[in-house]
Image (cartoon, rainbow, N blue to C red; front, top):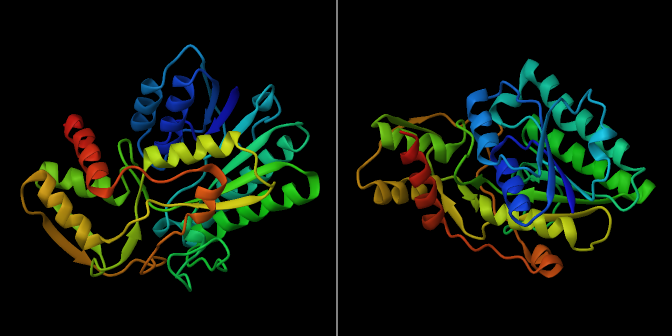
Length: 312
């Protein structure tokens, strides 16, 4: 199999590329190496997946010539995009519209003429906002509370449109709070664990009673791989969640237990766009792909702590 992975230098993209290469597939990785966080970290991710069957292309999907990237490709995993709920407000929204909506539309347009191509899109639980039911099934009406969530939902709708109008085989996966080694430096678990390692202050937004469904990166990769090769109706949408909802305070207690010392916690006001709870129903995903989460929170946190500790 020949696969395209957009956002290949990122957190999830590098793990997915590594898995595909280990299974003997050819991988084309594309990434614009944006300045959202340090380029040295992305270069480190790329170094970890260096392989004779891996070809890296530095380019921006919003203006790249996408045709050659799709030549001979069986599955396109579209993970590239502008991340972050808190930074998606105001003038920076243009970056989100370009990277998450325009780039996706251009990729879909290039893919629609490729017979037999499947496109797997990495969406987000942010599309639900403060959902009306928990655990939240795909049938619940999306109602994002941040500009980021709006752009992820718009790209999902584009996938559905190209499936309905052109027969393009698309699958959208709504990820619920992904964590693990190589997690972005702005994300909570990396911030918490690095602060614990360095004896620094841990900043929490809100009371810490907000609840999240945390999903370990290997479980996300498993869902991606299966969705790329298992037949499903074009335009399908699935939740991918770890299956256990925990408060931020519970996470902090787990971290204290793992590192063996108390954390210096500083609390600030709730950030705009944050929701009080996420919890994903993965019944549909299990039925379609036989998928279930395998890594529980404590084990996943321990693995991420080992990675953070090795950085020092």
